[in-house]
Structures are given as structure tokens and as C-alpha cells.
Image (cartoon, rainbow, N blue to C red; front, side, top):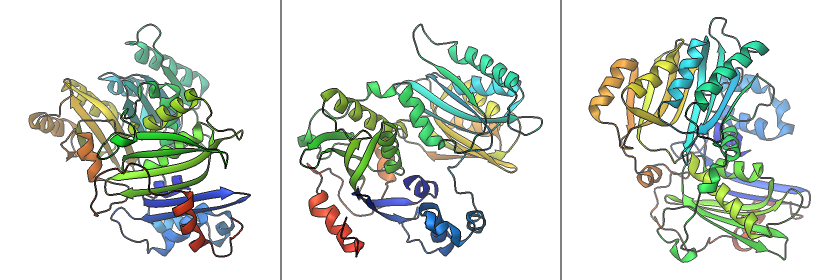
Length: 425
């Protein structure tokens, strides 16, 4: 459900989740990106069809989607093409080298997304035959592409350093691209270097680091996870990806945002019904949640929005321009829509500093089309505080000692008011 709302680029400001005894009730407070209430009846119908199976007979989803006049899917993502998944050590020029090899092999890249975190990199390239414009499915061609890319990715890896290169052909029900990036980075064990604030609950007030506390609710048989961090778009989606892929079931939850901070409280069990009973289990879950929250915002540098003519080898040319000007890419996403290609890149110089204006002007000349500088700050706190999950303009920029909501004094009171005849819950 959260994935559907996220792909529609809706902002979730609050959520109350409850499921037990065969019933569930999930409440999401959503607005558009500007904080406005949803009034488009077509959009509301699409949400109802996407979330509720009994509503899907009220109109063909494809027809409703046409009325929305846009694709309902993550930006810069192609589900009809062969997917190339790469993980390994992050280094300057890696994306440029991969895209150059793909171009030389006659592969066109209509979409690509790359994340970096804790000196590791994960990339998903969607590729097609550059001449025929179709997915690459021939086994011999797939094997040849994979072999060439193995050489590129492994060129700068030391002994014992993990890496992977994997090609998959189009298939029904392909995993959501951003969730797949989370899975790739988890498999690459980037979470092992993640640490939350060591100051404890007394240091939450005003701290901008991610805080995760895990307690037990023995009388109900739950483990309780409390998360406090900087608020931002897609925060709930990223957190739920981590919990779900780690085989935890969320039975109850309450999520809210205050100013530029977010509170999340989850009552969970493992899929086998067990709770987190050992310190090792709690430590691993803490590390994985921090990693899931920080991957999307760990990038630094200058953000460039690019819009130019779509053509074969475009990604290779753009990333080569970055490399030749001494820049490295910390996060990127690019996609095509007909004749146009659009994307965003976070770039920094070799010293880890923002790019100077002269270099930006050179990039504009080399790349062509429209190159817009969106963000000039590499400070994560200032970036995060400018875009929050709630888009709230209310005051308050500090974290409380403990969450002010719980199942007893908030979740149930809100649900009882909404549930009407659902007294059995």
C-alpha cells in the first residue's frame, strides 16, 4: 500500500496501522507534494482500485491510468527491459566505465538508478538492443555483456572484496526498483558500518542523527521498535522495505512528523511468530534500519537536473563529461520519455567538495540541452530540513525524549473514532 502511494508521489504525514485477529485497519493521511488535499476523482478512483481488490471491477485500471495522463510508477524506471544489477566498491568513474562498455556492446540505456553508501555502490541499468530497441534475451549476448562488465567492475577490487554483476530478462512481478536497490545494498552488507547515536534517549533532544530503540512488549508478545530521525519523502517506504525484507511482520504502528523530524513506532514479530530476544538480533535490526533510512540521503555534492535529447550513448557521454572534469557521482537516476531524456545527478570533486561554477558551465556546454543546478549545499542536515515527509510549516525542530504516542493513548483512540462497527479489532 505504501509503495502505491509513494509511486503516486503523495506525501504521507501520518499513519496508523493495526492488524490482529484476522482484521486490519490502516489509516494514511496523504496530500500532494504541495500539501494540498486530493480532489482529482480519477486519482482517488485509481488509489481505490490499486489498494482494494473488490474495487478493481469499477473500471479498467489502464483506462483510469490514461485519464491520469501519466505513468504510475517510480521515475526513471523501465519494467519492460533487461535489468543489469551491479554492486561493488564505490569509486570515481565507475558509472562512466560501465555505461561506456554498454555503449560499445550496442546496448541502449533508457533508464538507470545508482546509489552509494558506506563506500559501496549499487546500480540498476535497464538496457535494450540499441539497433532493434527490444529487450536483450539471447543467452549468448547476455553472457557476453555480463563477462565484459565483470572485468570492469572487478578491475579495482582488492582481494576478498565482494562484487556482483547480474543480468535478468523482463519478467512479471519484477521487484520495485528502489526496493531492489535496498536489497542489493543489504546483500552487500553495507549496514555493518552503520551506527546510531550512542547518547541514548537523553541525547535525542535536538540531535539530527538516526535513533533506533528496540524494546519488548512481553504481555502482548511483540517487539517494539521506535525510530526518530530527520523527516523526508519516502521515509516510510524505506523503513518498511527493511522490515519486510528482514522477515518481520508489522502488527501495529503509528507514524507522525513534527516539523523536520519524524517519529515511527512499530509493534513487530518475525514471520515465525518470534520476537527479538537476543542482543545480536536487536543490533542487526538497528543497523539495517539506519542503513535503509540513510541510503537515500547519504549522497553529497551538487545536484544537477538534466533534460536533453534522447539518443544512443547519452548516459556514456554524460558520465564521461563528469569523469573528465574530475567529478564523481554519489547518486543518480536517469530515464527517457519519447524524444526526451531527463535525470538527476549528485556530483562532487575529487576532494569531496561542491563543484565550482566554471566546471558547471563546462558541463552545460558538453552535455547540451538543459542543465539546472538544484542544490548547492552538501550539508545533509540543511538538505533534509528543507523537504519533509509532512511538508509542515509548523514550528518545532527538536526531538522529544520518547515518542508521545503508543497503542494505548493514541493509536486505538484514533482507530476507534474511525472504525465504526469494527469493534472486534
